[in-house]
Length: 355
Image 1 (tube, rainbow, N blue to C red):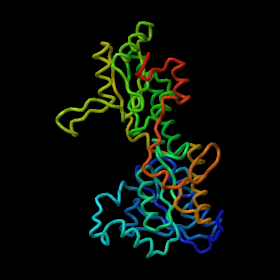
Image 2 (image 1 turned 135 degrees about the horizontal axis):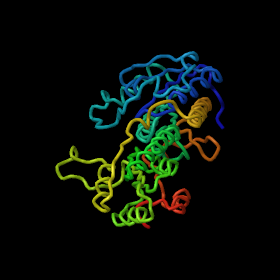
Image 3 (image 1 turned 90 degrees about the vertical axis):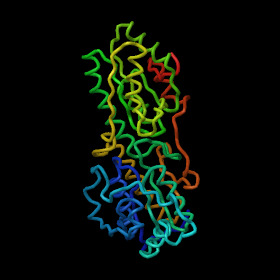
Image 4 (image 1 turned 90 degrees about the horizontal axis):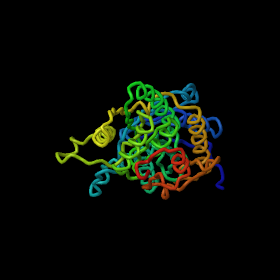
């Protein structure tokens, strides 16, 4: 373990990518531990990596970090800025990465804490390769960051989506309809899988398990013939659907496609609901507050021990450090042999692949 040399250290914090519940709890965990435990100076950058590029930052006091644990969003703001996208290496001195390095050096930072998802981890690793001391924290409602059992924001999103599905049950039952609910997650099915099971969905369609039209037809008709005139289908936004030939602007949402498909295959009435950004908003769940606090506090520990180029991660019930070079560029996806899927199949949940 490295010797702790924390007095006088200056650290920066930024939140990048999409917002999610728990960001403020993480900022608080990093900042309070850094200030109170290690006597560091803490600076917050505005709007993710843009704050470093545009030199928009402010020093954070312990008082600034009080009262934000339960707040949704991020007090620092965020953006999807990707500083390494389309970099002209022939004019590198005027590039965004060069501006980030300049700001880091100008302030005299000893470390930078990057809080975000997969894109943020890639950029954090590249900045580490530039010579900056970087520690990262994994956040996303998608739960798809490699190297950690859970990302903060995921538990809150599961609760929000599951509550929405609970409410959809009432309408589905009243009208005897098939309701198709679309959930976020990009290319990973974690949020759809967990919220679908928590909400008692009859069918769960995720990107990692290709569905078959004949299975969808057979399953829904069987339910109908068994006296179950309504069904709940939860679909991930990343499932494969046919695209219109007129271009990307003419693509249709997975929920709309599956609802139309169900009616075509079975003759049963189907309606779609897209939960959208509601899944990312609001106050974090108690579990996300705890996880974000633990990860944030551990990040300050890593800086104090000068263990840079790492991401704080949950492994079982412990917080550990993962090398950014192992994390960057990888996705954690659902596997078909997951115990949760096996248990779901045992209670007659259909994944569109077999029945």
